[in-house]
Image: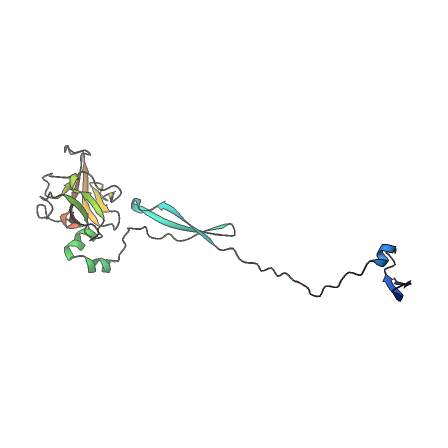
Length: 223
């Protein structure tokens, strides 16, 4: 394929040379149109792929003992990745050595080894001040003084605990039901039902005094 060369005369110049493609039909407009300017710079657009950032959400789930736990899920390109659950706020987990370091020998025997104090010897057996009874191991509020009553059994008795603060588990022999702190698992005692006490629940939470720590009603709970 060749190029055609046309020469024309102009009043302003002696001659004019125009080169065109033979596949294009020459017209007067094409001949007089100035050539397209040649770009003096070229621009390139660079695209860089970025991997999607994970989006983390917190999904509450119910864990052992009714405590809330957090479960994290990350979304990577539409794929759900389940991550390990973290301990729930307020839950207390310690090794046996750590418990021995913070508890007295008698507290460790009862709270961690499920022992029982002798009846009538506990400091809270005949104690009826206003306030709150907390777990001696972790400080979690367990009982209000308004739920304490004199059962005559030789141990502090309550007809109900703070909602969600206490777990109930049947003993292996099926004879009694053990009650423990929901936050740390410390042994509190046993619960008995249907004994005929004139209380709103007809239950008796028989609790070891040494498993409890009393906070008076007029004290500052933050201290």
